[in-house]
Amino acid sequence: MAVFASEHPLVKHKVSLLREESISVKSFRELANEIATILTVEATTNLALKQTPITCWSGTISAPILANKNPTLVPILRAGLGMLDGALKILPCAKISVVGLKRNEETLQPESYYQNIVADIEERTAIIIDPMLATGGSALATIELLKSTGSKSIIALFLVAAPEGIEALQSAHPDVDLYVASIDEKLNDQGYILPGLGDAGDKLFGTI
Ligand code: URA
Image 1 (spheres, rainbow, N blue to C red):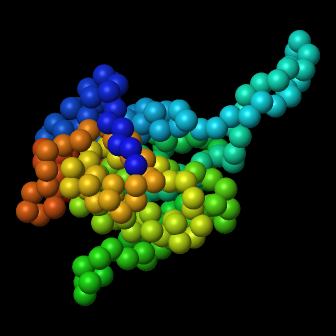
Image 2 (image 1 turned 30 degrees about the vertical axis):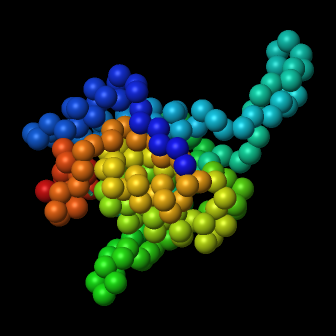
């Protein structure tokens, strides 16, 4: 697996604005989606192309189009929805596979309470979107769910990632590439990323 931390100056600038303690819900939503748009561009640079005849105004030419079906976007409920519009700007025809996870209070592990994954998942790259990669528990559960339904190609996008979460994903799923806007310092005792963004779901949904 490879980890790609964006070097784009606009991504760095927008992540800094996201960190402002007094940020409004509106600005947080806008910035999260704008960063998701850029990360989606960066994450799709290696999609395979095939030469195809295209009839254009000057005749028939051989032109490159995507070799495979469009990727499916996989927002993890609920915070992942906060990156969906931004990702759809680049992949407007993408089918959406939704995963909802909750903590099993006995095992303390995330469990799926809702999943609606495209039927032809094995023919599409799955692009997981979630603002925060903290311990990695939700991302691991989502990757395992996707693989168990036939997914063969998975990429994951995060706004902010902790080294602990990256390590967890790297060791369990070396085939999954990660695209992140920022790799932060560490997790605190409550599992929040430092310096991080606070609770990204609450900030996106205005439930603080
Ligand atoms: N989820 C969040 O929303 N923030 C964190 O810092 C960690 C997990």
